[in-house]
Amino acid sequence: MEEEKEMVTVQVNLDITVEALKAVVANAKAVAGTDDRGVYRVDTADKLGEIISRFLEERDFEGFAKDLQNYN
Image (tube, rainbow, N blue to C red; front, side, top):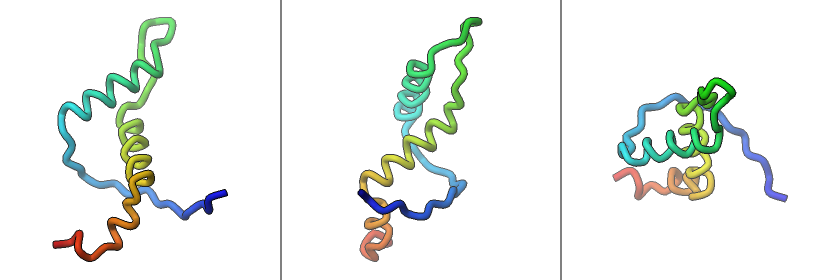
């Protein structure tokens, strides 16, 4: 089993494409569905954070961050 790493929440500003944001919002709404009044009960900003965090973990952002070549 993989060792759990200590995590910290960081509030940052990111530049992403409008299309990526639209996709996250649309997919989050599709997964959450609507309540009995037709209202979506999903925090799309939180979902965006979850999606980006998972992407960074799966794509080894830690290794990328440790590589000095990526700071040029």
